[in-house]
Length: 343
Image (cartoon, rainbow, N blue to C red; front, side):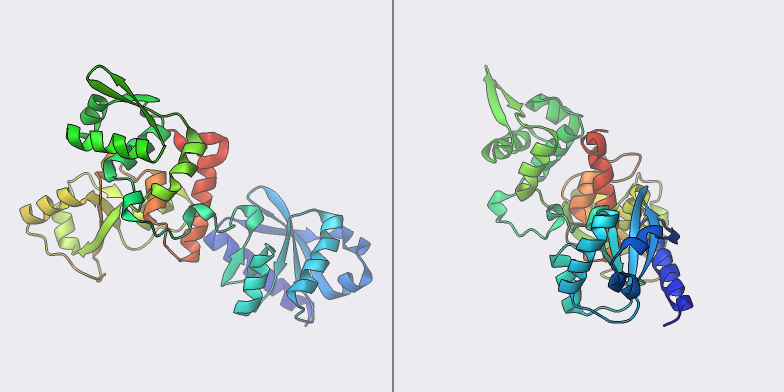
């Protein structure tokens, strides 16, 4: 294969990563490649690149398609001269080889189709694995909103029932049950002050988020589509952007062609009857996707956009690689300097 072929592969790699994740800028050939053993110099093309402010070394096999075990050994040698930020570029890959590369946490890019970059925070976080839970282990809608409000700093460590009633406009019985759920899952404790119950969060921030994971649920109960004509008739409503539409505002994901909005299920039933809206069961040209939520999404929304943590929960079982990358980007941005639990 000639030199131009590898330059084309590198250009394709740069365009692919830049289009779905973040700009990958390929710079100069690696000048210290001459310090490597001769067999590695003859086997690979090396180029330096920058991604998200970090420098990486890309390497492409010139000739053979070696085993993952050999690649791993070669990377160990290369890393002794360069450091950890090494990315293997391969134009074609089998499912078995992909699995082995992921198992060994080897950074790799298949231009145009796949990438796996654990060093760039694309490590298929445990946070977003599919979760199948017993209903008895789930937080109810009110309890989940209370937890997220606290993580965002909108509720103090000690909360009275009346405070939640005023904020969420729900019944005392509903709030009392939510308090019991948070206490039973050991996410909070209670203090009795006369006839009043005080909820007290005793763990905070990332520790609270991690401990709550087994009990958090997807807030979306149902998805429907409506004709654009009907949507325009009720467009004066305060619609909350959700799904990929919201994710594209929080990350580098391209804005989807389909508009996606969230509304509380109970509220939607009233709107549907009031405006005589016909629900569509599938996407049609010009239709709008409506997510029907367990709770009122406007309680946590920011400037008519679903709050980040609820958004991540609502998209937890998505298998689209572009979306997984954007979710990782959002989660890491939230986590940077502990910003993710604040407004």
